[in-house]
Image (cartoon, rainbow, N blue to C red):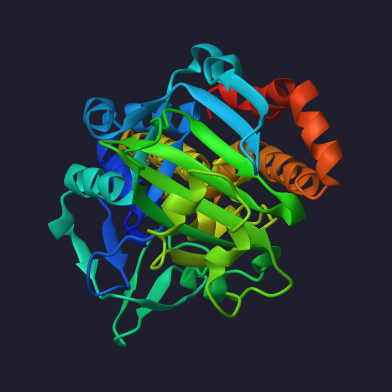
Length: 379
């Protein structure tokens, strides 16, 4: 087997998952991370069934099940707590499998253990990547690789220097994420539950187990910056348990939401995965799922190419440009679907409140099924 010299830029979920997937294909990779220390942000993650399936394919299903919390229902309420839609996740995902919730730190730790955290070079930022696969690092050193993978998120240094495609587009939404403890005096929250207010406001709670909740709040905004004053006042009219949970959100992680609506992810020696390629709205919780699917497909194609080269089929060396183009061809339609569905859902959140609520009451479950139907098939 001919080993491609591979660099994975970014040691977040996508980068670590790719390192694991490449290892499963018998391939090694250098992994670099610009941060000098291990850090995670975002508080928690809801893993839809296709994301769980991808992690199981990485051989992490048993440990994931031990750390994560099963989610069996999705509920949508108005801001006063009145029901708009309520259905089992099995109605959306069928026999694809179950959905889980996990803290981002737990998922990151799981992936670090799967690849060996000591194999990642921390504090090693990328300054540029050229067309020949030569990477210049922030410390001035340089190395040349057959394949450079940008798994370094929406602010990707690989995309910024090796690609001239679409830049992240602000979605007109800002959000806060935090983990809170449930109110012991209130009934436990057992389901994925979104509370919808006027003006596009959403407050989502997802149980993590052990009395903890992943809380996500977002609002429409003309600018990608946090408003002046205490952001929690924006949700002051939401019914319980929101006020109790907001008391614990003073140090919530803030983010402006962006999208990269582009499928130009490949150069002769460089490729983008995850948010670096196609950051999207969190509306369908598919950002992590798409990243995990990306790395499985990319690792599979690189493994197949290496095996062919090892048997002499690639006598003059592997055509990495063709391998990367095949990755893009396999992933583009699926990612485009998710982006289009997110865009439709984000428009729906800004319908007049009575019309939005009526739509969810009448057709919420059917709309969710339609959004996710093409994702039932393997990537």
